[in-house]
Structure formats: structure tokens, C-alpha cells
Image 1 (cartoon, rainbow, N blue to C red):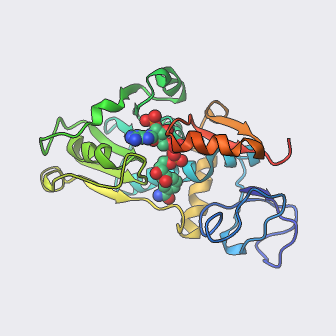
Image 2 (image 1 turned 135 degrees about the vertical axis):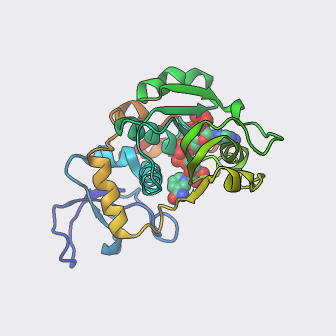
Length: 262
Ligand SMILES: NC(=O)c1ccc[n+]([C@@H]2O[C@H](COP(=O)([O-])OP(=O)(O)OC[C@H]3O[C@@H](n4cnc5c(N)ncnc54)[C@H](OP(=O)(O)O)[C@@H]3O)[C@@H](O)[C@H]2O)c1
């Protein structure tokens, strides 16, 4: 959620500050953001960084923040533009569509994997230079396939993540954040011991505040997604049940931004 600070005893904030919250217990063990007024612990709150507005941060949201954390973690493991293509799976979804845009902004060559045949042009418009059908990630029998990807941003898991382990280039790293394709992982240790492939877990919920602030600053500057409005549908509260159904069916394109007052 995002909004304006109304009242606080926390010296870090003043009434009128523009802020956002993702993760922690919000919407899970604590009332969520579908409300005009929300009270949360100050330790959860992130100032909206210069360069982004309220619409931008909600268009990015938890999914986009997770995409950015994935890229930061890949960079921490040595990834730089020019090392080869970076593949993004679940590319038309929330994590995927922001990952494609951030990677393109940073100058990476981006390959997008999608199950939506009709969205290849859309993914190219977000910055993908190559679009591949989801069928490429079918279960395989070989422990290694052609060494292709310098890195991967994966929010799908399951057979897709197993395929990634088999097709990474030497020392390639995979940032794994999701499970839309399943939680089971059937793979071998061969990619780790023969190609030095790295599997990096990504959690946005309990991400420490210093990394959170630094990552939002990146999202506002060098990593800023260039085409956010193309990957967002603005909806009202009454549209939520339909939006949830679309998400459950894996049929969403980008993100929904919920406007409380229309
Ligand atoms: N670790 C974290 O902190 C964190 C934070 C946010 C989200 N997540 C997780 O990340 C995942 C993605 O979140 P999201 O917000 O991007 O969801 P989303 O908007 O629904 O996108 C998921 C995308 O995955 C693809 N997909 C759907 N069903 C699939 C299937 N059966 N097999 C293969 N691909 C499938 C679809 O993309 P295509 O049609 O383009 O293939 C879909 O648009 C979820 O599992 C979510 O729980 C984790």
C-alpha cells in the first residue's frame, strides 16, 4: 500500500510524507491496504524515493520490489551487462514484467519466457530482445542442456526452475522467488558441480530495512521500469474478486493498481 502520513510519533517521519509498505505482516496477520486509513508499525514504512510517485510504487508493488531484489542479488553474485542473456520466466506476470523492464533499463540482454502466445510483442515493448514459449521449460531427462543463460529471474519454480538449472551458462546464477509452476523441484546436482551454477533464494517479506531502502532507491534511478503504465490495470475495490480470479488462473498481464476512490 502507499499513502500520506497522517500522524506519527516516529522521528523518521512527518505528517504529509509520502510512504509505502510491502511485506511484513501487512495483509497477512495485520489488516491490509484496502482502506482509506491504515495504522502500521513505523519500522515497516519506506519513504517513497524521489523519482517515483504513488502510482509508480504501487505499479511496482511487492512483485516489482521482488524483481528488483532478485536483480540486486544477481549483481551481488557478479552479474554485469555483456556477460550474456538474462532469462525472465513468468514474464507477463507482476514479478516478470517488472524484471524485464529493470533488466532492460540496466542494459542487459533480456530473454522472456511466457505461456501467453499473444503477448510476445508486449514483452518486446517492455524491453525483451528474445521471447520464448513456456514449452521450452518442459521436464528433461538430461542433467545438462546447452549452456545459455548468464542469469535468471525465476518466479515460477517447479519444472521451469529445474530447466533453468540445466541450461545456465558456466557460473550462471538463478534468483528464485516464486512457485506459480509448482513447489516440487526435480533436478540433479550436476549443474552445481560441473557448471558452478548458483541458486539464490529471494524473500521480499522480511527483507532488512537497509536493503529495502537501497533497492527502492535503485527502482527510482538506474533500474527504473520505463513502461509501467503499459503493464498496469487500474481497478476499484469492486473489481477485486475478478482480479483475484485472473491472478489465480495465471492469466494476469502485469499488475493491478487498486484505487480506493474513483
Ligand atoms: N519471494 C517473494 O518475496 C515473493 C514476492 C512476490 C511474489 N512472489 C511469488 O512470485 C510468484 C509470481 O508472483 P506474481 O505477482 O508475478 O504473480 P502473477 O502476476 O500471477 O504472475 C505469475 C506468472 O507466472 C506464469 N505462470 C502462471 N501459471 C504458470 C504455470 N502453471 N506454469 C508456468 N508459469 C506460470 C504466468 O506468466 P506467463 O503467462 O508470462 O508465463 C503468470 O503471469 C508467485 O508464486 C508469488 O507468490 C514471491
